[in-house]
Length: 170
Image 1: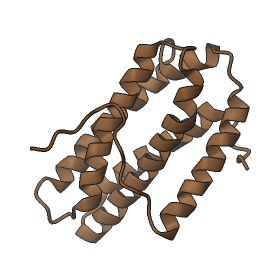
Image 2: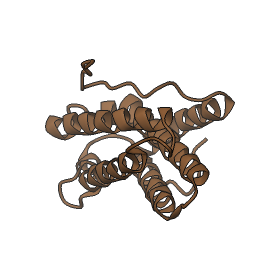
Image 3: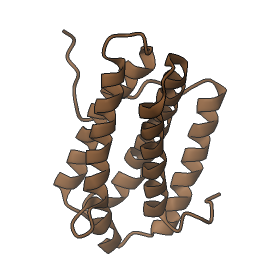
């Protein structure tokens, strides 16, 4: 069940944000290709799990309770990240643009986090004002996260599926 350090669903999501920020910093400091690939895979796994619990549980709980534009933009931002996540997971540090893809993913995630965590009118601020039980939401999200983490360890997660952006083959 939910860990005591996560007081509610928003605290859980913020903890995920801090973990991924730390992983991006580790990637930037890494020198060997193997180390970079290990960290990049960790980043991708963390982000896939995070986007899944947000899209399956958190965002739907607030549809109609916060600004639709805020939620719609979050889904589209997730999809942009998913494209890079899938590309990074399929590649290696020897590939052209590998480091650049991880860097751009980092920048996209920083932007997304800033919008969610903005104090006065960010998504989380809006969510705190909505009539939703954030502790019950945390418990559902934590249970799903634990299932996804076990799946990732057992055999891996499926590719990240965009929901709002329709990819067109070149």
